[in-house]
Image: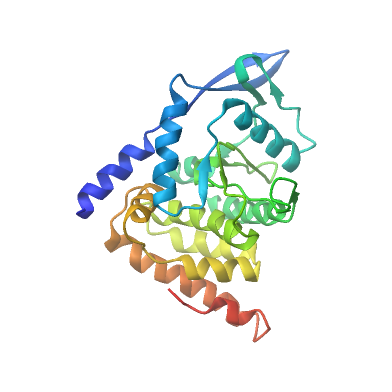
Length: 275
């Protein structure tokens, strides 16, 4: 398949919506009511076939009750101090609104302190990756951590992760799952037109710091083929390979510089470029 056609298919993939989200006020609290759309099981089935062919390691949850359980589990696990997430009628999930705006919106607004937002995001991701999840019997991971799913309140210096519609396959190891979370964030970032992405990516990687996860990430930073390439296009805002490949090399160099700066410790060999 030629690149323009692949990018068109990826663009269509990004338009798929399986949930209906409505904002309202319940008992004086602003909430989002999230519910599966009619016909979503069939859409999810086809989406999962594509994700399997792309060897993505992630899947959408077909059953509405199982998805609702996962959504509630993740919010309660990561943010036990937040107002309670509840199960509503017809398998709807009622989620109290989170203060702040997404990293994607911050970038589009060209906020001057967006660098701080990416540092806060990396710090939060490092924190939640250390939380043990009973489903994985290991560290937790998100599975679809693009920039719209990271909400930042710069005034409160707080970041919250949202939208747990997908998850990594349970048989995949913790390091690989967590490196995929980082990769999804960075692909979304480097797919943007603005060339100011390097300081943001550098700040994000340096703040995250976990050597084994970053080492695995470095090994994953190459453009794949086949169905996996379609997934990469969808994650990188349908950017061309000509734009993405040099930026991936820049990301690998950032990781290597961090490895070198931390000295020749036993973890340093994890940062070799094997792409």
